[in-house]
Length: 105
Image (cartoon, rainbow, N blue to C red; front, side, top):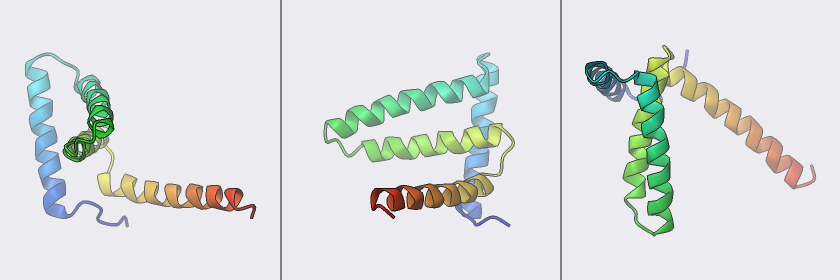
């Protein structure tokens, strides 16, 4: 079983946001996954600009990106907690390999 990366209340809120977002995009005739990816690209650009300018609002925009990432996982039928847990392990393993290589070990 996967860890609870998002607590149940937060996960339910993300699921509700996803349903609202899906409903809205259907109403305006925009493919939902396409719109999510578009918004993610926009947020990345905004995060880069704000961070370069020293504006700490980039942290809030990063949180928005997190919500969009969770939405994309839900859109694909994935378990948000399961994918996040799997990715933690992947990052830990890869970073340890990079550290070992950089330290000559």
